[in-house]
Image (cartoon, rainbow, N blue to C red; front, side, top):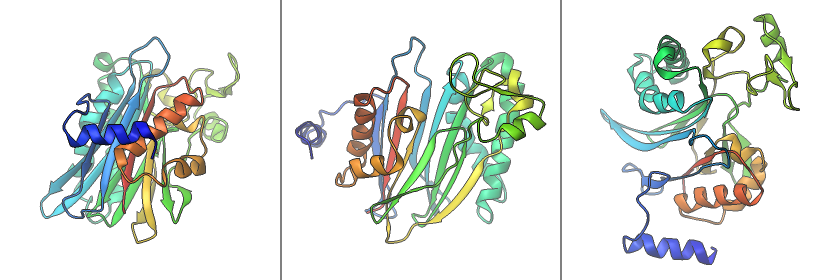
Length: 283
């Protein structure tokens, strides 16, 4: 552990750590081994911070849920902020959640996107990507995503990607079938209608006919092989591979220090985007 991380850990023990909302941690009441930590760093752009996170353990009836999410906004922060406040509530309202969580999450994503579009006069023209993870009783992890924020699981030191990067270059046929097009002009990044660099997102009313908000959903059983999971915005993944991210924190026990280390490494690698990261440790 680096000297700066040791110093931060000492400050936490004596109550001198920052209470700023860009960093935090928590732990499960069901299992003392399951903890989480998060850290956010604003990018070098002139606009306001557009990344938002959810990271908490919540008791629901006789069950414990770990609720984790990264919302990476574009063209404003209203949509990701709305998602932070409402998406998990909509997921948990679904009557099928306990029997068919994947189905419930897909339905909630669709309902939430429809509401955002209806509120576009209030929320603005922007949109947001999302990666969400629901940890059910520390035993089952259900990951869903739209866009290019990503979830990566570490099992026996090996990185396993649990989400799908929704890029215009890989979904150009679907975009074309919806009446849109993919272009690298202006710039050198494929964009939907030459404007948006992801093919799925919440919001974006002016592009919605050509975009999708349907999530990819993956379910992973958390067994003894599972060490930790990383959720992060593309500000991290643009400059680090899945395995590099796993390797950089595999020897750090503290979840918040792990998330902080990842954001610092992304900055060191010249990432200019907003960077947000959540680490959930299972051991």
